[in-house]
Length: 208
Image (tube, rainbow, N blue to C red; front, side, top):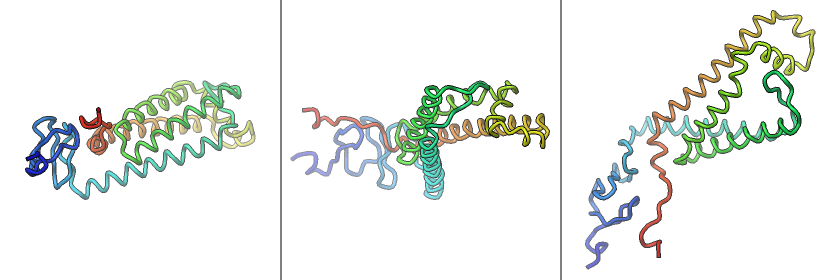
């Protein structure tokens, strides 16, 4: 009698035969809760309400990044200011393509809960932090960025206190950078959400 006829089933992660009523795979450590198998080493699943909130938050963030990627497409021909100096067309295009790739990868990963999502978000957070760090420490570069944003319209700058505007811009930049890192820590705390869809594995019967 084959294992299947005896009520045994294959573990969805290591493909070894285990008892049909088993809640733990003795070969790889995968666990089953409420009929759902979870990857080896992942913690027990959160309560249903928390799981729904987590899914809503993460997928909403994914949509936000996909929308950001769309706006990057619209901005491919726009110039950028790096370190307080206007970049050339080639550098500007590379800048937009870099963010386009990061936003697409993060959006897709967050929406579909890919196992590599946290790594991509970490890379995006590092890139964004390095990109904005100059404005936290170089007020001249920040002033140049503000002037570039206003299109060199000096009349608008005459209506406001430049120092106050620079302080506000620095504070907002620091808050946005902190939000990126906070979101990364949130994903790290919810990593079991992504571990539920592990990297594909080749099963023994597929090898030949």
